[in-house]
Length: 310
Length: 310
Image: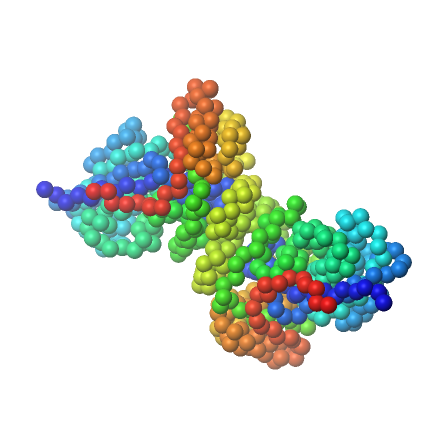
Protein backbone atom coordinates (compact mmCIF):
# COMPACT_ATOMS: atom_id res chain seq x y z
CA UNK A 1 0.00 0.00 0.00
CA UNK A 2 1.24 3.53 -0.81
CA UNK A 3 2.04 6.01 1.92
CA UNK A 4 -0.46 8.88 2.15
CA UNK A 5 -0.94 12.01 4.23
CA UNK A 6 -4.03 14.25 4.50
CA UNK A 7 -3.87 17.89 5.54
CA UNK A 8 -6.61 20.39 6.37
CA UNK A 9 -6.31 24.14 5.73
CA UNK A 10 -8.84 26.68 7.02
CA UNK A 11 -10.82 29.42 5.37
CA UNK A 12 -9.39 32.89 6.00
CA UNK A 13 -10.59 36.48 6.14
CA UNK A 14 -8.20 39.01 4.61
CA UNK A 15 -7.89 42.82 4.65
CA UNK A 16 -9.90 43.26 7.88
CA UNK A 17 -11.17 46.75 7.01
CA UNK A 18 -8.13 49.01 7.40
CA UNK A 19 -5.44 46.48 6.47
CA UNK A 20 -5.80 45.93 2.73
CA UNK A 21 -3.16 43.37 1.61
CA UNK A 22 -1.79 43.41 5.18
CA UNK A 23 -4.12 41.74 7.68
CA UNK A 24 -5.71 38.31 7.60
CA UNK A 25 -6.99 35.70 10.04
CA UNK A 26 -7.91 32.03 9.98
CA UNK A 27 -11.40 30.94 11.04
CA UNK A 28 -12.55 27.82 12.86
CA UNK A 29 -15.07 27.18 10.07
CA UNK A 30 -14.81 25.42 6.74
CA UNK A 31 -11.60 24.55 4.92
CA UNK A 32 -10.04 22.25 2.34
CA UNK A 33 -8.64 18.74 2.64
CA UNK A 34 -5.77 17.60 0.45
CA UNK A 35 -4.39 14.06 0.44
CA UNK A 36 -0.89 13.46 -0.90
CA UNK A 37 -0.03 9.93 -1.98
CA UNK A 38 3.36 8.47 -2.90
CA UNK A 39 3.28 7.44 -6.56
CA UNK A 40 5.55 5.16 -8.54
CA UNK A 41 5.74 7.42 -11.60
CA UNK A 42 7.86 10.53 -11.14
CA UNK A 43 6.26 13.97 -11.20
CA UNK A 44 3.10 15.51 -9.77
CA UNK A 45 -0.41 14.52 -10.69
CA UNK A 46 -3.85 15.55 -9.45
CA UNK A 47 -6.02 12.44 -9.59
CA UNK A 48 -9.20 13.47 -7.81
CA UNK A 49 -11.07 16.68 -7.06
CA UNK A 50 -14.38 16.68 -5.22
CA UNK A 51 -16.72 19.43 -4.04
CA UNK A 52 -15.74 21.75 -6.88
CA UNK A 53 -18.70 21.25 -9.18
CA UNK A 54 -16.12 20.17 -11.76
CA UNK A 55 -14.70 23.64 -12.07
CA UNK A 56 -11.11 23.23 -10.89
CA UNK A 57 -8.40 22.24 -13.39
CA UNK A 58 -6.55 18.92 -13.05
CA UNK A 59 -3.59 20.50 -14.84
CA UNK A 60 -0.93 20.94 -12.13
CA UNK A 61 0.27 24.12 -13.84
CA UNK A 62 -3.16 25.70 -13.49
CA UNK A 63 -4.42 24.30 -10.19
CA UNK A 64 -3.24 26.32 -7.14
CA UNK A 65 -2.43 23.16 -5.17
CA UNK A 66 -0.42 21.88 -8.14
CA UNK A 67 1.48 25.15 -8.60
CA UNK A 68 2.35 25.36 -4.89
CA UNK A 69 3.53 21.73 -4.67
CA UNK A 70 5.58 22.00 -7.86
CA UNK A 71 7.34 25.00 -6.33
CA UNK A 72 7.91 23.04 -3.12
CA UNK A 73 9.42 20.08 -4.98
CA UNK A 74 11.65 22.47 -6.87
CA UNK A 75 12.87 24.17 -3.66
CA UNK A 76 13.50 20.75 -2.10
CA UNK A 77 15.15 19.47 -5.30
CA UNK A 78 12.87 16.45 -5.05
CA UNK A 79 11.74 14.45 -8.05
CA UNK A 80 9.58 11.91 -6.22
CA UNK A 81 6.22 10.91 -7.66
CA UNK A 82 3.25 12.48 -5.87
CA UNK A 83 -0.48 12.20 -6.42
CA UNK A 84 -2.88 14.81 -4.99
CA UNK A 85 -6.54 14.38 -4.13
CA UNK A 86 -8.36 17.60 -3.33
CA UNK A 87 -11.59 17.81 -1.36
CA UNK A 88 -13.02 21.31 -1.65
CA UNK A 89 -14.99 21.88 1.52
CA UNK A 90 -15.42 25.59 1.03
CA UNK A 91 -16.85 27.76 -1.74
CA UNK A 92 -14.89 29.31 -4.65
CA UNK A 93 -14.54 33.02 -5.27
CA UNK A 94 -16.14 33.54 -1.90
CA UNK A 95 -13.57 35.90 -0.38
CA UNK A 96 -12.56 33.18 2.07
CA UNK A 97 -9.18 32.34 0.61
CA UNK A 98 -10.30 29.18 -1.17
CA UNK A 99 -7.32 29.10 -3.53
CA UNK A 100 -4.85 29.58 -0.68
CA UNK A 101 -6.52 26.83 1.35
CA UNK A 102 -6.01 24.14 -1.30
CA UNK A 103 -2.43 25.25 -1.84
CA UNK A 104 -1.63 25.41 1.90
CA UNK A 105 -3.14 21.99 2.60
CA UNK A 106 -1.25 20.55 -0.37
CA UNK A 107 2.19 21.83 0.62
CA UNK A 108 1.61 20.82 4.26
CA UNK A 109 0.67 17.29 3.16
CA UNK A 110 3.52 16.86 0.65
CA UNK A 111 6.12 18.30 3.04
CA UNK A 112 5.08 15.64 5.56
CA UNK A 113 4.65 12.79 3.07
CA UNK A 114 8.14 13.18 1.59
CA UNK A 115 9.73 14.38 4.86
CA UNK A 116 11.03 17.47 3.05
CA UNK A 117 11.48 19.43 6.31
CA UNK A 118 11.05 22.80 4.65
CA UNK A 119 10.58 25.83 6.94
CA UNK A 120 7.22 27.55 7.39
CA UNK A 121 8.54 30.52 5.38
CA UNK A 122 9.52 28.22 2.51
CA UNK A 123 6.11 26.55 2.53
CA UNK A 124 4.51 29.98 2.63
CA UNK A 125 6.52 31.18 -0.35
CA UNK A 126 5.08 28.23 -2.31
CA UNK A 127 1.52 29.22 -1.41
CA UNK A 128 2.24 32.88 -2.27
CA UNK A 129 3.62 31.76 -5.65
CA UNK A 130 0.35 29.97 -6.41
CA UNK A 131 -1.66 33.02 -5.28
CA UNK A 132 0.36 35.16 -7.63
CA UNK A 133 -0.22 32.86 -10.55
CA UNK A 134 -3.98 33.13 -10.23
CA UNK A 135 -4.54 36.71 -9.04
CA UNK A 136 -1.65 38.44 -10.77
CA UNK A 137 -0.07 39.85 -7.59
CA UNK A 138 1.95 38.20 -4.84
CA UNK A 139 -0.07 38.75 -1.68
CA UNK A 140 -0.01 36.74 1.52
CA UNK A 141 -2.97 38.01 3.51
CA UNK A 142 -4.86 34.75 2.92
CA UNK A 143 -1.84 32.49 2.41
CA UNK A 144 -0.13 33.36 5.72
CA UNK A 145 -3.06 32.92 8.14
CA UNK A 146 -4.17 29.83 6.20
CA UNK A 147 -0.81 28.11 6.55
CA UNK A 148 0.15 29.44 9.99
CA UNK A 149 -3.18 30.20 11.70
CA UNK A 150 -4.04 33.16 13.93
CA UNK A 151 -4.25 36.85 13.11
CA UNK A 152 -1.42 37.92 10.84
CA UNK A 153 0.37 41.07 9.73
CA UNK A 154 1.99 40.67 6.32
CA UNK A 155 4.87 43.14 6.63
CA UNK A 156 6.47 42.06 3.43
CA UNK A 157 5.98 39.40 0.80
CA UNK A 158 9.49 39.49 -0.65
CA UNK A 159 11.37 38.44 1.40
CA UNK A 160 8.43 37.13 3.36
CA UNK A 161 8.04 38.83 6.78
CA UNK A 162 5.00 37.64 8.68
CA UNK A 163 3.95 38.60 12.20
CA UNK A 164 1.42 36.80 14.38
CA UNK A 165 -0.63 39.10 16.60
CA UNK A 166 -2.27 37.99 19.87
CA UNK A 167 -6.05 37.54 19.71
CA UNK A 168 -8.30 38.84 22.52
CA UNK A 169 -10.12 36.14 24.49
CA UNK A 170 -13.54 37.69 23.85
CA UNK A 171 -13.24 38.19 20.10
CA UNK A 172 -15.70 36.23 17.95
CA UNK A 173 -16.48 36.50 14.26
CA UNK A 174 -19.76 36.15 12.43
CA UNK A 175 -19.66 35.58 8.70
CA UNK A 176 -22.00 34.98 5.79
CA UNK A 177 -21.26 33.66 2.36
CA UNK A 178 -24.07 34.61 -0.03
CA UNK A 179 -24.12 32.55 -3.22
CA UNK A 180 -22.99 35.36 -5.50
CA UNK A 181 -19.76 35.18 -7.43
CA UNK A 182 -17.19 37.92 -7.31
CA UNK A 183 -14.41 37.86 -9.84
CA UNK A 184 -11.27 38.16 -7.69
CA UNK A 185 -9.17 39.56 -10.52
CA UNK A 186 -11.79 42.16 -11.40
CA UNK A 187 -12.12 43.12 -7.74
CA UNK A 188 -8.37 43.61 -7.58
CA UNK A 189 -8.12 45.53 -10.82
CA UNK A 190 -10.83 47.93 -9.67
CA UNK A 191 -8.64 49.13 -6.81
CA UNK A 192 -7.16 52.60 -7.30
CA UNK A 193 -3.49 52.80 -8.28
CA UNK A 194 -2.98 56.04 -6.35
CA UNK A 195 -4.76 57.32 -3.26
CA UNK A 196 -4.75 60.62 -1.37
CA UNK A 197 -1.95 60.86 1.22
CA UNK A 198 -4.61 61.92 3.73
CA UNK A 199 -6.50 58.66 3.20
CA UNK A 200 -3.28 56.66 3.45
CA UNK A 201 -2.40 58.35 6.76
CA UNK A 202 -5.83 57.51 8.19
CA UNK A 203 -5.30 53.89 7.16
CA UNK A 204 -1.83 53.58 8.67
CA UNK A 205 -3.03 55.23 11.87
CA UNK A 206 -5.77 52.64 11.95
CA UNK A 207 -3.57 49.60 11.25
CA UNK A 208 -1.27 50.78 14.05
CA UNK A 209 -4.25 51.24 16.38
CA UNK A 210 -5.72 47.85 15.43
CA UNK A 211 -2.52 46.04 16.41
CA UNK A 212 -2.48 47.91 19.74
CA UNK A 213 -6.13 46.90 20.24
CA UNK A 214 -5.30 43.22 19.67
CA UNK A 215 -2.37 43.35 22.10
CA UNK A 216 -4.34 45.12 24.79
CA UNK A 217 -7.66 43.30 24.15
CA UNK A 218 -9.34 46.68 23.67
CA UNK A 219 -12.36 45.78 21.55
CA UNK A 220 -13.64 49.37 21.56
CA UNK A 221 -10.42 50.55 19.95
CA UNK A 222 -10.60 47.59 17.57
CA UNK A 223 -14.05 48.82 16.53
CA UNK A 224 -12.87 52.40 16.01
CA UNK A 225 -9.84 51.34 14.00
CA UNK A 226 -11.80 49.18 11.55
CA UNK A 227 -12.38 51.92 9.00
CA UNK A 228 -12.03 51.12 5.30
CA UNK A 229 -11.71 54.04 2.91
CA UNK A 230 -10.01 51.97 0.19
CA UNK A 231 -11.54 48.60 -0.64
CA UNK A 232 -15.08 48.68 0.70
CA UNK A 233 -16.21 51.75 -1.28
CA UNK A 234 -15.00 50.13 -4.53
CA UNK A 235 -15.90 46.51 -3.95
CA UNK A 236 -19.27 46.62 -2.27
CA UNK A 237 -20.90 47.26 -5.68
CA UNK A 238 -20.46 43.54 -6.47
CA UNK A 239 -22.11 42.37 -3.27
CA UNK A 240 -25.87 42.77 -3.38
CA UNK A 241 -27.45 44.07 -0.16
CA UNK A 242 -24.01 44.73 1.33
CA UNK A 243 -25.01 47.86 3.25
CA UNK A 244 -28.20 46.20 4.53
CA UNK A 245 -26.23 43.20 5.76
CA UNK A 246 -23.55 45.27 7.45
CA UNK A 247 -26.17 47.46 9.11
CA UNK A 248 -28.05 44.38 10.30
CA UNK A 249 -24.83 43.09 11.88
CA UNK A 250 -24.11 46.38 13.64
CA UNK A 251 -27.74 46.71 14.78
CA UNK A 252 -27.65 43.26 16.34
CA UNK A 253 -24.55 43.57 18.46
CA UNK A 254 -21.55 43.38 16.13
CA UNK A 255 -19.01 46.13 16.80
CA UNK A 256 -17.53 46.12 13.29
CA UNK A 257 -18.22 44.61 9.88
CA UNK A 258 -16.52 44.60 6.49
CA UNK A 259 -16.01 42.61 3.31
CA UNK A 260 -14.02 39.40 3.67
CA UNK A 261 -11.22 39.61 1.09
CA UNK A 262 -12.73 40.71 -2.18
CA UNK A 263 -16.15 39.36 -1.21
CA UNK A 264 -18.93 38.37 -1.50
CA UNK A 265 -18.50 37.02 2.05
CA UNK A 266 -19.13 39.58 4.77
CA UNK A 267 -17.75 39.27 8.28
CA UNK A 268 -18.46 40.99 11.56
CA UNK A 269 -16.75 41.05 14.96
CA UNK A 270 -18.61 40.52 18.24
CA UNK A 271 -17.59 40.35 21.90
CA UNK A 272 -19.41 37.10 22.71
CA UNK A 273 -20.26 33.80 21.07
CA UNK A 274 -23.98 34.35 21.61
CA UNK A 275 -23.84 37.69 19.80
CA UNK A 276 -21.81 36.19 16.95
CA UNK A 277 -24.39 33.41 16.55
CA UNK A 278 -27.24 35.89 16.47
CA UNK A 279 -25.43 38.28 14.12
CA UNK A 280 -24.65 35.51 11.62
CA UNK A 281 -28.34 34.54 11.54
CA UNK A 282 -29.49 38.14 11.15
CA UNK A 283 -27.02 38.67 8.30
CA UNK A 284 -28.21 35.48 6.62
CA UNK A 285 -31.83 36.64 6.97
CA UNK A 286 -31.09 39.61 4.68
CA UNK A 287 -30.18 37.21 1.86
CA UNK A 288 -32.99 34.77 2.75
CA UNK A 289 -35.47 37.59 2.21
CA UNK A 290 -34.02 38.07 -1.28
CA UNK A 291 -34.03 34.33 -2.00
CA UNK A 292 -30.24 34.34 -2.33
CA UNK A 293 -28.75 31.15 -0.86
CA UNK A 294 -26.43 32.05 2.00
CA UNK A 295 -24.28 30.09 4.45
CA UNK A 296 -23.73 31.55 7.93
CA UNK A 297 -20.72 30.86 10.15
CA UNK A 298 -19.52 32.09 13.51
CA UNK A 299 -16.80 31.23 15.99
CA UNK A 300 -13.29 32.19 16.96
CA UNK A 301 -10.13 33.05 15.14
CA UNK A 302 -8.44 29.69 14.61
CA UNK A 303 -5.05 29.35 16.27
CA UNK A 304 -3.84 26.55 14.01
CA UNK A 305 -3.25 26.95 10.30
CA UNK A 306 -2.84 24.05 7.87
CA UNK A 307 -2.41 20.80 9.82
CA UNK A 308 -1.95 17.11 9.15
CA UNK A 309 -5.16 15.27 9.96
CA UNK A 310 -4.30 11.73 8.92
CA UNK B 1 2.18 88.15 46.01
CA UNK B 2 0.49 86.67 42.93
CA UNK B 3 -0.05 82.94 42.55
CA UNK B 4 2.17 81.38 39.89
CA UNK B 5 2.74 77.93 38.38
CA UNK B 6 5.58 76.74 36.15
CA UNK B 7 5.29 73.77 33.77
CA UNK B 8 7.89 71.96 31.68
CA UNK B 9 7.12 70.30 28.34
CA UNK B 10 9.60 68.05 26.52
CA UNK B 11 10.95 68.03 22.99
CA UNK B 12 9.34 65.37 20.79
CA UNK B 13 10.20 63.33 17.73
CA UNK B 14 7.34 62.89 15.26
CA UNK B 15 6.68 60.63 12.23
CA UNK B 16 9.20 57.94 13.29
CA UNK B 17 9.95 56.78 9.74
CA UNK B 18 6.83 54.86 8.68
CA UNK B 19 4.25 56.80 10.73
CA UNK B 20 3.98 60.20 9.06
CA UNK B 21 1.43 62.32 11.00
CA UNK B 22 0.75 59.25 13.18
CA UNK B 23 3.66 58.40 15.51
CA UNK B 24 5.52 60.60 17.96
CA UNK B 25 7.49 60.24 21.17
CA UNK B 26 8.73 62.49 23.96
CA UNK B 27 12.44 62.58 24.78
CA UNK B 28 14.19 63.02 28.12
CA UNK B 29 16.22 65.88 26.63
CA UNK B 30 15.50 69.59 26.29
CA UNK B 31 12.09 71.25 26.58
CA UNK B 32 10.31 74.51 27.32
CA UNK B 33 9.32 76.14 30.60
CA UNK B 34 6.22 78.30 30.86
CA UNK B 35 5.21 80.18 34.00
CA UNK B 36 1.60 81.27 34.38
CA UNK B 37 0.89 84.09 36.84
CA UNK B 38 -2.45 85.32 38.13
CA UNK B 39 -2.97 88.90 36.94
CA UNK B 40 -5.36 91.60 38.11
CA UNK B 41 -6.33 92.76 34.64
CA UNK B 42 -8.60 90.40 32.73
CA UNK B 43 -7.37 88.62 29.62
CA UNK B 44 -4.17 86.90 28.57
CA UNK B 45 -0.80 88.57 28.23
CA UNK B 46 2.70 87.33 27.43
CA UNK B 47 5.08 89.43 29.49
CA UNK B 48 8.42 87.73 29.04
CA UNK B 49 10.09 85.46 26.49
CA UNK B 50 13.67 84.30 26.90
CA UNK B 51 15.91 82.00 24.87
CA UNK B 52 14.18 82.87 21.59
CA UNK B 53 16.71 85.34 20.18
CA UNK B 54 13.79 87.80 20.12
CA UNK B 55 12.01 85.92 17.37
CA UNK B 56 8.77 84.83 19.04
CA UNK B 57 5.77 87.16 18.98
CA UNK B 58 4.34 88.59 22.20
CA UNK B 59 0.95 88.86 20.48
CA UNK B 60 -1.18 86.12 22.10
CA UNK B 61 -2.99 85.58 18.81
CA UNK B 62 0.29 84.72 17.07
CA UNK B 63 2.27 82.97 19.79
CA UNK B 64 1.51 79.21 20.04
CA UNK B 65 1.38 79.34 23.84
CA UNK B 66 -1.02 82.27 23.63
CA UNK B 67 -3.26 80.60 21.06
CA UNK B 68 -3.45 77.37 23.10
CA UNK B 69 -4.21 79.16 26.40
CA UNK B 70 -6.84 81.40 24.81
CA UNK B 71 -8.57 78.25 23.52
CA UNK B 72 -8.33 76.70 27.00
CA UNK B 73 -9.88 79.78 28.67
CA UNK B 74 -12.65 79.70 26.07
CA UNK B 75 -13.42 76.01 26.69
CA UNK B 76 -13.40 76.62 30.44
CA UNK B 77 -15.49 79.79 30.03
CA UNK B 78 -12.94 81.56 32.20
CA UNK B 79 -12.20 85.26 31.97
CA UNK B 80 -9.50 85.45 34.64
CA UNK B 81 -6.39 87.52 34.05
CA UNK B 82 -3.29 85.46 33.21
CA UNK B 83 0.27 86.44 32.45
CA UNK B 84 2.64 84.02 30.67
CA UNK B 85 6.42 83.94 30.82
CA UNK B 86 8.05 81.63 28.30
CA UNK B 87 11.55 80.21 28.62
CA UNK B 88 12.57 78.59 25.34
CA UNK B 89 15.04 75.89 26.26
CA UNK B 90 15.01 74.20 22.89
CA UNK B 91 15.68 75.37 19.33
CA UNK B 92 13.07 76.62 16.83
CA UNK B 93 12.26 74.99 13.53
CA UNK B 94 14.40 72.09 14.66
CA UNK B 95 11.94 69.26 14.05
CA UNK B 96 11.69 68.70 17.80
CA UNK B 97 8.18 70.05 18.32
CA UNK B 98 9.25 73.41 19.69
CA UNK B 99 5.90 75.09 19.01
CA UNK B 100 3.98 72.25 20.64
CA UNK B 101 6.24 72.34 23.70
CA UNK B 102 5.52 75.99 24.52
CA UNK B 103 1.81 75.43 23.99
CA UNK B 104 1.71 72.22 26.06
CA UNK B 105 3.64 73.76 28.95
CA UNK B 106 1.37 76.81 28.84
CA UNK B 107 -1.94 74.92 28.97
CA UNK B 108 -0.58 72.61 31.68
CA UNK B 109 0.46 75.62 33.79
CA UNK B 110 -2.75 77.62 33.28
CA UNK B 111 -4.99 74.60 33.91
CA UNK B 112 -3.25 74.18 37.26
CA UNK B 113 -3.02 77.87 38.14
CA UNK B 114 -6.74 78.50 37.66
CA UNK B 115 -7.81 75.00 38.77
CA UNK B 116 -9.72 74.58 35.51
CA UNK B 117 -9.73 70.76 35.78
CA UNK B 118 -9.93 70.20 32.04
CA UNK B 119 -9.34 66.66 30.76
CA UNK B 120 -6.12 65.65 28.98
CA UNK B 121 -8.08 65.46 25.71
CA UNK B 122 -9.34 69.01 26.17
CA UNK B 123 -5.85 70.30 26.90
CA UNK B 124 -4.59 68.39 23.88
CA UNK B 125 -7.23 69.93 21.64
CA UNK B 126 -5.91 73.37 22.68
CA UNK B 127 -2.35 72.44 21.71
CA UNK B 128 -3.57 70.96 18.41
CA UNK B 129 -5.44 74.21 17.71
CA UNK B 130 -2.22 76.16 18.13
CA UNK B 131 -0.32 73.71 15.90
CA UNK B 132 -2.97 74.18 13.24
CA UNK B 133 -2.71 77.96 13.41
CA UNK B 134 1.01 77.91 12.66
CA UNK B 135 1.42 74.92 10.30
CA UNK B 136 -1.89 75.06 8.48
CA UNK B 137 -2.98 71.53 9.38
CA UNK B 138 -4.27 70.03 12.61
CA UNK B 139 -1.77 67.34 13.53
CA UNK B 140 -1.02 65.89 16.93
CA UNK B 141 2.12 63.82 16.45
CA UNK B 142 4.18 66.36 18.42
CA UNK B 143 1.35 67.78 20.54
CA UNK B 144 0.20 64.42 21.98
CA UNK B 145 3.57 62.98 23.11
CA UNK B 146 4.58 66.44 24.35
CA UNK B 147 1.52 66.81 26.59
CA UNK B 148 1.09 63.16 27.55
CA UNK B 149 4.60 61.66 27.25
CA UNK B 150 5.57 58.24 25.94
CA UNK B 151 5.27 56.81 22.43
CA UNK B 152 1.97 57.78 20.84
CA UNK B 153 -0.29 56.69 17.99
CA UNK B 154 -2.47 59.55 16.75
CA UNK B 155 -5.45 57.59 15.45
CA UNK B 156 -7.52 60.65 14.85
CA UNK B 157 -7.26 64.37 15.48
CA UNK B 158 -10.97 65.15 15.27
CA UNK B 159 -12.34 63.90 17.59
CA UNK B 160 -8.99 63.35 19.20
CA UNK B 161 -8.13 59.62 19.62
CA UNK B 162 -4.67 59.06 21.07
CA UNK B 163 -3.09 55.74 22.03
CA UNK B 164 -0.04 55.26 24.24
CA UNK B 165 2.16 52.33 23.21
CA UNK B 166 4.48 50.47 25.60
CA UNK B 167 8.19 51.22 25.19
CA UNK B 168 10.80 48.42 25.26
CA UNK B 169 13.20 48.57 28.21
CA UNK B 170 16.27 48.54 25.96
CA UNK B 171 15.24 51.24 23.54
CA UNK B 172 17.43 54.38 23.49
CA UNK B 173 17.47 57.29 21.08
CA UNK B 174 20.37 59.29 19.75
CA UNK B 175 19.64 62.66 18.18
CA UNK B 176 21.45 65.59 16.65
CA UNK B 177 20.21 69.07 15.95
CA UNK B 178 22.42 70.74 13.35
CA UNK B 179 22.05 74.52 13.25
CA UNK B 180 20.26 74.67 9.92
CA UNK B 181 16.78 76.00 9.61
CA UNK B 182 14.00 74.07 7.92
CA UNK B 183 10.81 75.89 7.08
CA UNK B 184 8.12 73.67 8.60
CA UNK B 185 5.40 74.96 6.30
CA UNK B 186 7.54 74.45 3.21
CA UNK B 187 8.47 70.95 4.38
CA UNK B 188 4.78 70.17 4.78
CA UNK B 189 3.75 71.68 1.46
CA UNK B 190 6.38 69.63 -0.35
CA UNK B 191 4.66 66.40 0.67
CA UNK B 192 2.78 64.68 -2.16
CA UNK B 193 -1.01 64.99 -2.18
CA UNK B 194 -1.45 61.52 -3.67
CA UNK B 195 0.73 58.45 -3.33
CA UNK B 196 0.76 55.01 -4.96
CA UNK B 197 -1.52 52.49 -3.21
CA UNK B 198 1.43 50.10 -3.18
CA UNK B 199 3.51 52.59 -1.18
CA UNK B 200 0.61 53.21 1.18
CA UNK B 201 0.19 49.46 1.78
CA UNK B 202 3.89 49.13 2.62
CA UNK B 203 3.53 51.99 5.09
CA UNK B 204 0.46 50.59 6.82
CA UNK B 205 2.06 47.16 7.04
CA UNK B 206 5.02 48.85 8.68
CA UNK B 207 3.02 50.95 11.17
CA UNK B 208 1.18 47.76 12.18
CA UNK B 209 4.49 45.90 12.54
CA UNK B 210 6.08 48.76 14.49
CA UNK B 211 3.31 48.69 17.10
CA UNK B 212 3.71 44.91 17.43
CA UNK B 213 7.46 45.43 17.84
CA UNK B 214 6.91 47.93 20.67
CA UNK B 215 4.48 45.58 22.46
CA UNK B 216 6.74 42.58 22.12
CA UNK B 217 10.04 44.48 22.65
CA UNK B 218 11.26 43.09 19.32
CA UNK B 219 13.91 45.62 18.32
CA UNK B 220 14.82 43.68 15.17
CA UNK B 221 11.26 43.98 13.93
CA UNK B 222 11.27 47.66 14.98
CA UNK B 223 14.33 48.13 12.77
CA UNK B 224 12.73 46.38 9.79
CA UNK B 225 9.48 48.32 10.11
CA UNK B 226 11.15 51.75 10.14
CA UNK B 227 10.99 52.32 6.40
CA UNK B 228 10.03 55.74 5.07
CA UNK B 229 8.99 55.98 1.45
CA UNK B 230 7.04 59.21 1.94
CA UNK B 231 8.69 61.98 3.95
CA UNK B 232 12.41 61.18 3.97
CA UNK B 233 12.84 61.15 0.16
CA UNK B 234 11.20 64.60 -0.08
CA UNK B 235 12.54 66.30 3.02
CA UNK B 236 16.14 65.21 3.22
CA UNK B 237 17.03 67.77 0.53
CA UNK B 238 16.81 70.50 3.19
CA UNK B 239 19.15 68.73 5.60
CA UNK B 240 22.78 68.99 4.52
CA UNK B 241 24.79 65.77 4.95
CA UNK B 242 21.63 63.85 5.87
CA UNK B 243 22.67 60.59 4.20
CA UNK B 244 26.17 60.80 5.66
CA UNK B 245 24.78 61.33 9.15
CA UNK B 246 22.29 58.50 8.89
CA UNK B 247 24.95 56.15 7.53
CA UNK B 248 27.31 57.14 10.34
CA UNK B 249 24.57 56.28 12.86
CA UNK B 250 23.89 52.88 11.29
CA UNK B 251 27.60 52.12 10.99
CA UNK B 252 28.14 52.82 14.67
CA UNK B 253 25.48 50.61 16.16
CA UNK B 254 22.12 52.32 15.58
CA UNK B 255 19.50 49.94 14.19
CA UNK B 256 17.38 52.66 12.53
CA UNK B 257 17.58 56.37 11.75
CA UNK B 258 15.28 58.97 10.22
CA UNK B 259 14.38 62.65 10.17
CA UNK B 260 12.81 63.99 13.36
CA UNK B 261 9.58 65.70 12.27
CA UNK B 262 10.33 67.89 9.28
CA UNK B 263 13.99 68.20 10.30
CA UNK B 264 16.75 69.26 10.43
CA UNK B 265 17.11 67.12 13.56
CA UNK B 266 18.00 63.50 12.85
CA UNK B 267 17.34 60.69 15.31
CA UNK B 268 18.47 57.10 15.57
CA UNK B 269 17.44 54.13 17.72
CA UNK B 270 19.91 51.95 19.61
CA UNK B 271 19.61 48.98 21.97
CA UNK B 272 21.85 50.36 24.73
CA UNK B 273 22.69 53.67 26.35
CA UNK B 274 26.38 53.28 25.50
CA UNK B 275 25.59 52.83 21.82
CA UNK B 276 23.22 55.80 21.84
CA UNK B 277 25.93 57.98 23.41
CA UNK B 278 28.47 56.91 20.81
CA UNK B 279 26.03 57.26 17.91
CA UNK B 280 25.06 60.81 18.93
CA UNK B 281 28.75 61.81 18.98
CA UNK B 282 29.44 60.17 15.63
CA UNK B 283 26.45 61.94 14.09
CA UNK B 284 27.61 65.24 15.54
CA UNK B 285 31.11 64.67 14.11
CA UNK B 286 29.68 64.76 10.57
CA UNK B 287 28.49 68.33 11.13
CA UNK B 288 31.62 69.29 13.10
CA UNK B 289 33.69 68.36 10.05
CA UNK B 290 31.57 70.77 7.99
CA UNK B 291 31.79 73.50 10.64
CA UNK B 292 28.03 73.40 11.15
CA UNK B 293 27.16 73.89 14.83
CA UNK B 294 25.33 70.80 16.10
CA UNK B 295 23.87 69.72 19.46
CA UNK B 296 23.85 65.99 20.29
CA UNK B 297 21.39 64.30 22.63
CA UNK B 298 20.73 60.72 23.70
CA UNK B 299 18.62 58.93 26.24
CA UNK B 300 15.27 57.24 26.68
CA UNK B 301 11.76 57.92 25.54
CA UNK B 302 10.34 60.12 28.31
CA UNK B 303 7.36 58.62 30.12
CA UNK B 304 6.02 61.94 31.39
CA UNK B 305 4.70 64.67 29.13
CA UNK B 306 4.13 68.26 30.24
CA UNK B 307 4.39 68.50 34.02
CA UNK B 308 4.17 71.10 36.74
CA UNK B 309 7.64 71.80 38.11
CA UNK B 310 6.91 74.61 40.59
